[in-house]
Image 1 (cartoon, rainbow, N blue to C red):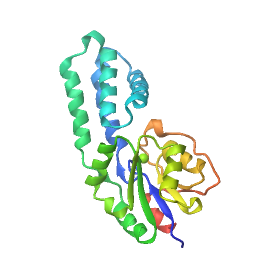
Image 2: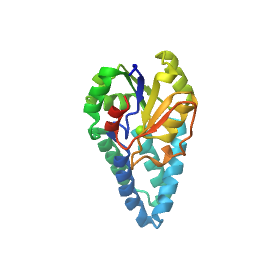
Image 3: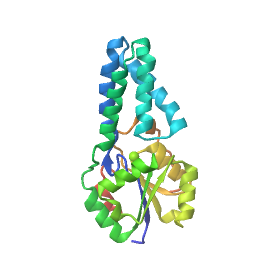
Image 4: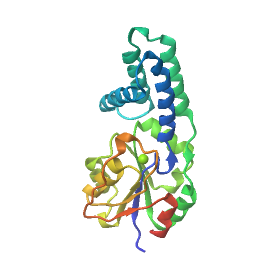
Length: 228
Ligand SMILES: [Mg+2]
């Protein structure tokens, strides 16, 4: 097989990520529930707050911590307690320190792929935070380049294609998110491998669109071996 360029997503593709956020959100909702709100409503307000804060501050745990605090202060109103805000931020700091839990079969599969193809890690988020995660994962050696962007959209895919001189017919985006990995990659003419993850973040959900490139759907990361 000819040498391909594989752009590979990190969160919920190489390691668990969103499941830790979901767990913290469940605890957060339990903390706010006694103020008299239904759980679904608390979640709705948190989602709205996150959307707003992401536009202003980008992705990352600090932006997430700010969203939890804003939601708490809004809902608890004059009953909001300083120590609860501190407690929320302690939980977020703990989340940031959690070592990456590498998904099943990932190191072996990367070792196989890097012998045959060019691998570029492509993730979005707060640059220092994502770089630290990559570092702690111990997987950086498999990649020719690590690319961290604020948003994975058609524009950032185009600039990545130009920067690394990727031949589109030989270029693939591999990831779990229809919104950030599959659809924008297909839109600029790359091929894509969609590996759904059961805990994919609500904000990354979207219908998978088709493009001029090929789309492969796989049940697990290790299945890449059969295709490359
Ligand atoms: Mg992901």
